[in-house]
Image 1 (cartoon, helix red, strand yellow):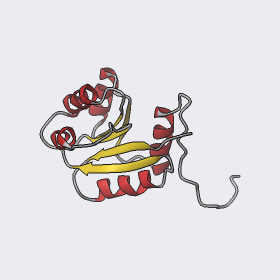
Image 2 (cartoon, helix red, strand yellow):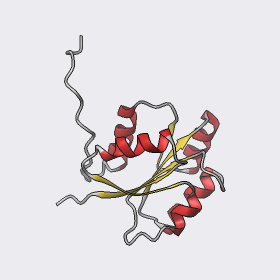
Image 3 (cartoon, one colour):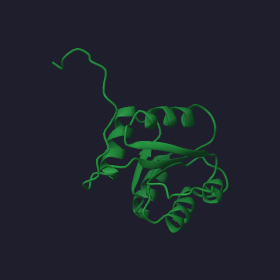
Length: 138
């Protein structure tokens, strides 16, 4: 049996966080269990179970995204972490530091779905949202 991955979104309130909630909510094997505006709030959140996925926006206040990632991984070592970088430099730094997955903001929804599938691709089923029927590719 495949259990849903508990998902925590760490991003400022607004369109990005709302979009993440909507997109991730369409993935049948993810359950968004919390939305917070900072890594400190994420670490203080009284979750009864460790999240399987933490989506962390680089724009969150209070700490450097890499420091926030390290704190989250220290608290929940089994959690996969997806950082949403603001700049190519942040993206490269995060990759160099060994972050699970990094996307540069401005990504297409399909890229987000693919990144989540890749994170859980080691025998763990996570499926992207179904696509709308459209014209056949040329």
